[in-house]
Length: 227
Ligand SMILES: Cc1ncc(C[n+]2csc(CCOP(=O)(O)OP(=O)(O)O)c2C)c(N)n1
Ligand SMILES: [Mg+2]
Image (cartoon, rainbow, N blue to C red; front, side, top):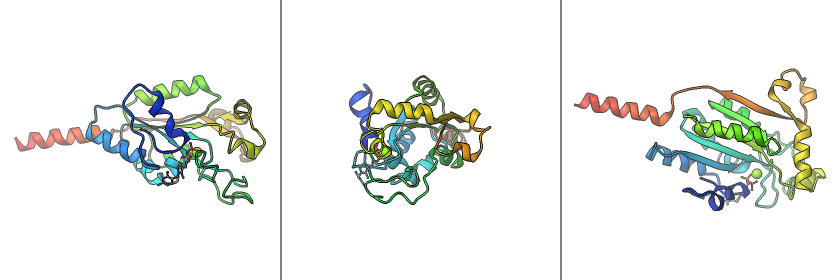
């Protein structure tokens, strides 16, 4: 499942499985319907920071709250990439973008924190530099029962990199390497030391009843009572 954006192109041409490329901001709504309709399906969503947290912000918080067995991989490039580099709810304060030529005045969301506050049960963040750890977290996210949220800080050299003076994709990955601190290390750092850093790691991994499982139990009890 994917919405509209650069991130939306990940599953539909590249994966040899059933894919749906749906409207902007709505992949989690579609995924919720698909999973409720057929709980035996493994449902995963590739989405962007704008797709999931601007136009689609409502759907992600409720999917997290419901703990529905949908896995969300959010490609966070901190900008609207595909449409030309407009400001997103993840864009750092002060950054000049197409729609904030004098610098962004708004404070950005911390996506992983937001999903945890909404009731998420598995939440992790890595960058495209942390390939091995990202793959390990993806495996965990995809094989667990409940909702999973994986934030992947990703380079958009065209619209983000050039705004911070980095034009090569590989240099953006080096920048991710330099600016990242693990959540364990971050605990020992002050707010000032953490300014401008990316805190990465596995933030949360807890068990809670999964929604389609609860429905299955409800149907079973209702059938028992009516017999
Ligand atoms: C209903 C609707 N509104 C707006 C658009 C235009 N639009 C397409 S992608 C996009 C934002 C993409 O940003 P993001 O989700 O962060 O994806 P990225 O390209 O950065 O991966 C917008 C505003 C649209 N296609 N449909
Ligand atoms: Mg984006």
